[in-house]
Image (tube, rainbow, N blue to C red):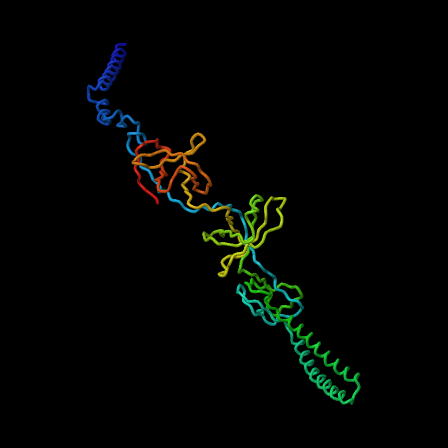
Amino acid sequence: MRNNTIRNISIFAALAVLVGGGLLYRSGFFGGEQELETAAAPAKPGGPGGMGGSGGPGGPGGAPLSVSALKIKTDILRDEISVNGSTASPEEVLVSAEVAGKITRILFSEGNYVNKGALLVQLDDEELQAQRKRLLVRKELTQRIAERLKNLYDREGVSLQEYEIARAEADQVLAEITLIDVQISKRSIRAPFSGLLGLKMVSEGSYVSPGMAIVKLVSTNPIHLSFTVPERYNTVVQKGTVVRFRMDGSDKTYTASVLAREPQIDPATRTLRVKASAPNSDGRILPGAFAAVSVGLKDYDRTIMIPTEAVIPEEGAQKVFVYRNGMAESVKIETGIRKNTEIQVLHGLQEGDTLITSGVMLIRPGAPVKIESLRD
């Protein structure tokens, strides 16, 4: 019993010491937390936290806010619509044989450019050549007989009927030679127009039948561009209208001139189909490729375009901040055409103004600002 009493007294004494020490520390008796807080955060002129009476950067009388700015300039604006299109060859054909025969020579290389009339494939024509030689012999004979009988007829040595029979036989041989020449020419397969050849589909020694494909030939210069425009723009696109287009994966811009358009609107899509032509002397534009087409609607001279992030919507209107005499001044603007990252300003800004483009949501009218970077 005595031991329990002594243990309880010891516990109460220890608790009293801990509580008393904590109170003395909080009161600053030992130079504790209060001194540390005071040392860590010394008071600054102008109110708590040194913010002064303005409430922080961006407010009147506060520290200047660092911003980026843009010097306003005028430029030409092209109002346009963007539509999808595809390139196409003006002419393309699967070169084939008109007659049956065995290929004796292939005279083209795959992927090469050939001119109109170039010999591509030669079929076996030995039999026809032999027939032609035989006919040439007959031609000489029948011509001489006809000439001899003509002289005799003039001297009344033979009848008119005998002379006409000889003349007809000579003419018949000439007609047979012409027929053989046509048949021989069909054994020489030539390029019907200038263009690029594809991959060959036959080999030397192959037997081809009429209409059997040998190689594809595609014309690539000029290149055609096919696209559609919405119905409401049908009056804008006429024959001769110049459009611009880019190929997928390339930043280069090409121009094309409208050749023709369909005579009616497609009732299913409410669009008008248009075909344009573009020069392609280097052959970089391949038929069948996707093209992003820009059709110009109207050009604006001396217009102002600004970044969209500089515009602040406000109660049904829009405003921007401009830099004037070290301060940010709020200016209401009227906007027009919107591009990807820019918007047209119709009223409110003038050439030479300095537009603030960063930190606009932190700025208040009349706030001091400091321009860190200025773009022309």
